[in-house]
Each structure stands twice: as structure tokens, then as C-alpha cells.
Length: 297
Image (cartoon, rainbow, N blue to C red; front, side):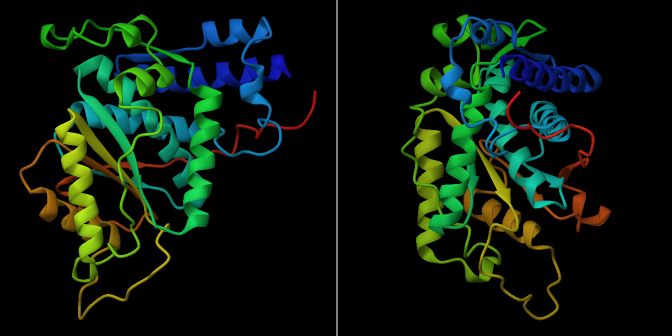
């Protein structure tokens, strides 16, 4: 089991680092200490479910997608990004990997990015997302992140504990308010068309924004189209893709010139070039080569 876990963690870090090197993102994952702990019999309790299912398990294509998004969040001043992902599993897993945007961008810019999943309010959907996130942090939370360039002088003052060992876990425990933040994330159920947004959803979203900004955090809203249970028909001749209508509504609520937040939408590949004038785009590559974790060894 330890040999297979080691191989998987090395595959994850290599996928992240190869793509980061290729596109010029000056952040690398480092699995050295995590693997050393495993070889010494430490932290094995975090992996007891690894062989039972694929919840929270990363694959190469999904990591590459997340690295592409992190690079664009770092380099691009556009507020909105779109990931063209036709498969539900790729939308789910790639959005988990965007948790790495927090510590990676904190290392490079000093900004405290807070990735938040905007989804429907059904208990089943939320339980599934929480379970996916829980396993993701269990499996990959201790992987270290290293920058390959020196930060700007104004960004040198990072949290001392995080800077000693930068990882997802130390970012969540030291830089963010807590591992289970108290921000009330609104439901996506009624945001598929701006004309049907309820006042309660609007109030929750604005409260979320004020809470995060007021504490010095920059919200990164991650939207997986397809999570909505309520599908509303287009009104009149309005054939604008739903994800763009959501972008438009959030921009109207937060302010069109506001640069304190970012939004990334995952949806089937339905956007045309004319839709992408103010949106950066990442295309999800389907992973057919990396095997799923299998049973006992």
C-alpha cells in the first residue's frame, strides 16, 4: 500500500510540476516530506479510504487544468474564467484541485485567496462536495508548495508558520480563518437566470463578499454548472449560455469594476469565441491514461 501511495503522490506532483514548468507558473509541489512520513508509518490513517473509492482522488488531466487556472489567476486581470469540461467527474475533481490556488497565489502575491464552491442547496449535493473536499485534503493537504522566484518586496511578509512549511493544510489553518470557515455560502439554485434570483440568495452572496473582504480575503467563486437542480428556460430570444448569465449577475451584484474577487465557471463546452472577449478560457483534457487507484496490493 505504501509503495502504491508513494507512486501516486509522485505522479500528482510530477503532473503539477511538469505543467507549471511548461506554462511558466513559478510554483512547484514537493512530496518529499509526505512520502518520508508514509515510509515511517506516519499519517497512514489519512489514506484508509484511498482504496475504497475515487472521491477526492486526483488524476493527471484534472491537475493540469487546475495549474492552467492558477496561472491565469496569477497573470490575467480578467475577473471571469471558464473551464470547458464536458464530463461531470472532471468538473468535480478539477474544481477540488483549485484549492491549490490559495497557497500558490499567497506565495506569489501575498493575497489571501479563499476558494469557495457555489452550488445548489440540496443536502445530497452538499454532503457529496464536503466528502470530496475532506478526502482531497486528507490525501494532498500535506504536500509542500515551493516558489521558484523571489516574491516582490511588498509580498515578503507571509504568515511565519505557513512560510516555514507551505501546504494546503497550513494555508487553511494559519492563513484562512479556520479549516471550517464560517462563511455562509449561498445556493446556486436560483442564480441560473438574473431575472429569477431570489432576495435571500442576493443577500447571502453580498454578505459572503463583505465577510471575506472585511477579513482581508479575496473570494474565488468556483461554479460547477450542472450542480443546479432547477433548470429555467431561456426568456424570449435570450440564448446566452447559463454560465455567462451567472457571471453577469455576480458582476452586477459585486460591481463591474471590482477586482477583489474572481470567478471560475465549469460547464460543458458551449461558449463561442464571441462569448470569450472578457473571459479567459481553459479546455479540460480528458484523462484516459492515468489508472484509477485499485484495491489491495
